[in-house]
Amino acid sequence: MGNIVAIVGRPNVGKSTFFNRLIEKRQAIMDNMPGVTRDRHYGYAEWCGKFFTVIDTGGYVVGSEDKFESAIRDQVKLAIDEASAVIFMVDCRDGLTGFDKDFANILRASKKSIFIAANKADTPDKTLLATEFYEMGLDAEIFPISAENGSGTGELLDELIKTFPEEGIEDPNAGIPKISILGRPNVGKSSFLNALLGTERCIVTDEAGTTRDAIHSHYKMFGKEYILIDTAGIRKKGKVKEDIEFYSVLRSLRTLEESDVVIVVIDAERGMESQDVNIISLAHRQGKGMVIMVNKWDLVQKDSKTADKFKKDILDKLAPIDYIPIMFVSVLEKQRIFQVMEKAVQVFENKTKKIATSKLNDAMLPEILHYPPPATKGKHIQIKYVTQVNARFPSFAFFCNLPQYIHESYERFLENKIREKFDFDGVPVRLIFRKK
Ligand code: GDP
Ligand code: GDP
Image (cartoon, rainbow, N blue to C red; front, side):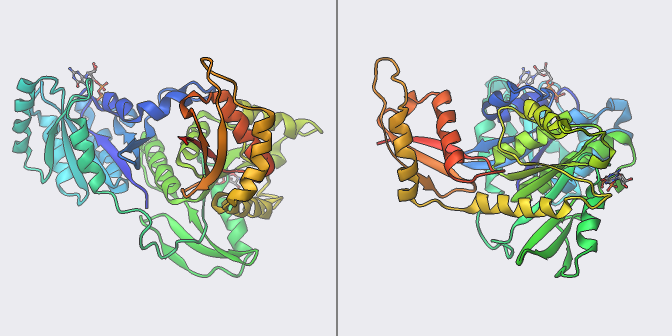
């Protein structure tokens, strides 16, 4: 189960400022990518080697203070349900407000770990004001922070990551590929799942997932067992449009954290939308395997170039991510649905395989010799050897004399060579440069 942290609180306390600070480093690269919307409200963060998905609930809350009951209340409840920890943000300069107390009342009932971030404590005298929030009577520690200058945020994050489960322990399903189906509403996720499961008689068990409507089906195909995580039914949850949108994002984030491989379904008539790009870029940063399934291909007027044009459009939007297999499917006509699953299983295998160091060096060192890293600042850069390191997804350590001088373009060259020599279709590949 993944770590999802929700930031809740009334408008203007500094939620998005804090959110941006958390995802800053990692986001910078992605924000330069075409097709990626900047007004993202979720992202991937790291603190002391622990990774978590963080969601700024403020980005989804449309109501103002007077609409608290209708809009924010529901969303906060959803966030609390889905998140593993909640950061409740208040404003030291404004002090305790009635609106804060409303939030506290909702949070009080939850069993999740709650951290009160008393924001805008930019100076020590402001820090003293934070104690006022104990009046809310929440069973939670108060951390005076400044989202703007960063003070106090380290202490908060230190405590936050302590609530995360230790990695790599007691997952009864460890080793079984977990494949999920994600995508915007109406792209055909449930139809796809029904088509898959309906025709197969070898479903092993159905068990309720971690939340009410996530179904984990154990399933057998190509002689292997795997788990399909189904997010269908998301729509039933919310009452109003914003809630539905918000909830479907929360569910997708949670599902993503749990999955090894995600099948991102898009509607052929609508093409790749910015939400799809956002989910894929998040999956990329989390090191997940991916397959893009373009569904409803039956509805598209086709000639011999249509598929290629479609592919190009997707790749343009995803650039520089270019390693994800794209499949054209009609669930309605049962076209290629099993090939998608077969691909997903292959991607899982790519994600988990280990290349022997000798094989890796035999393949890569001649390439490096042939096209060595260009000298930087008059310094000769030498890569001595490469080895695959243990990680959640394929990661390669290159040992060299001056790791800090390896250029992004050269890194790209090495990644392409690795992909050329070894099949890593559908999985992110990480390169690490170490001094030797
Ligand atoms: P949100 O509505 O909760 O997401 O709040 P924002 O992040 O948009 O911040 C609201 C305002 O508070 C903005 O003008 C921020 O610049 C300001 N702000 C955020 N964090 C701090 C802080 O730590 N100190 C001060 N002085 N201002 C802050
Ligand atoms: P979900 O919200 O992603 O689970 O989407 P559904 O499975 O409920 O499908 C939404 C609509 O698209 C339904 O009316 C389906 O019958 C339709 N649909 C699903 N797959 C296809 C397809 O391959 N071709 C066409 N023409 N319609 C499809």
